[in-house]
Image (cartoon, rainbow, N blue to C red; front, side, top):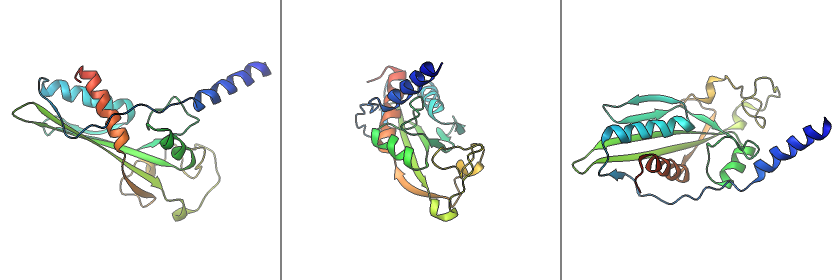
Length: 184
């Protein structure tokens, strides 16, 4: 029994240590889909964003999709895909980082223009000080945040420091949308 448990633990660690950098090609934004309908681009965009974040608002008429902030997980949680590069995975392992995405779709005379923006923030631990309770923890490295804590997703919270845009994740999301639409 101990061998099975030890084998499963080793397999989990090896899976977390496997190379997980996703090859991401830079994409000029906005992306224009010339021969694709607005409805198809909308459906693909919402579906891809839902795979990575909880949707906050989706207004098809105005072409605006916003997601809630989602804590991004680190190197030892290989089943999560909220970050793209190995550096991001390690940063997420040591810090509490959250991301949210926005997509803007516009109809043009030549087709549909899509812009995807991903914001990245890190928890400012100096603001509150550390509390050491692992019950209902949202992050094993930051036990002060509970999994059901609304400060995780509150965009007005002072607990977070803005780190700017995550362009690699934007490129990754745009690539997934293009793949879903079959357009390259």
